[in-house]
Image (cartoon, rainbow, N blue to C red; front, side):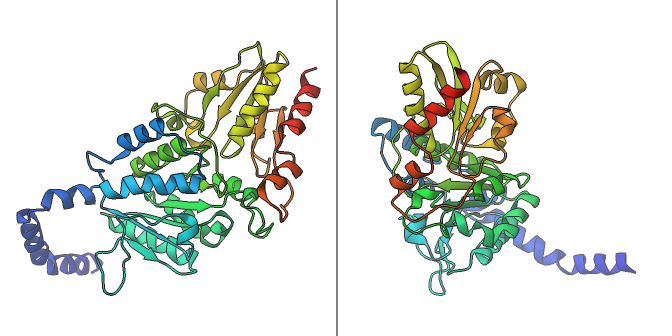
Length: 367
């Protein structure tokens, strides 16, 4: 009985389906529709030219701004990208010149003003991705990712290409204080299976994160981005973020320390390494923009970055729980308390993210 009902329902739409396929096949944009519905990116995404522009003129900007800059290039070349924000467009930097608003008067718009509806935004993006032909991305503050967590989990469970732009990623957001300063959120998101979580360190890592997110047809991506400006650290087009972690700086003296850092703390790790080198202590700096991709690399690559004969030190403005799998019994420099309300530079110093506070801890372990 059930089988007969299903077959009857299918037969009812058979003619309409055949007619639609015939119209679609004859349409001048049939190939473009097929490409989008297959989830394939255009041959030209604008990424390569954008990376070259960053190499030519390395910017000192917040990674939320780096994300906007990347989106300007990508949304111009990839028409199926549909953006939005949960009432934080001006802060998330998710709108571009190529994404006019979607509303009752303009169904051809590519940007959705979701209002203060983080969960609604995330579920709507899941729906778009499940329909096909659309690559949705949407923004809010990282601390508000809790509101849409169940939908983020469903993105991963359903293997959907959805991109979450979570800005104001640490105590670096400053005077808004501990209610808005995410501490546990990045680590919590890393716990979700089949979810890529990026915390890029500069404009090139941010662009690479976007390129990887768009190429990941069967899993969602989180971009955790800063409010504060970060210096340029990368000046090449090697797509190093694809391995999840890579050696940014190699030790000059005999290597005794490996510093692992993400996001805004990678520049700090470079300064720590320079201070150690000045004392004859060799230190590698390893940028770790994406744990999940690093864990997918072969054992030889991971061992090369994390040698057994060096003290391993993690530096991240978030909870330290979890870093032990990389540093072992080494040092974890992080935030195991809530933040406070003050300018970003004051907060980073107060909570120990400073060269003169990290170096003595390292020296005490290798002396």
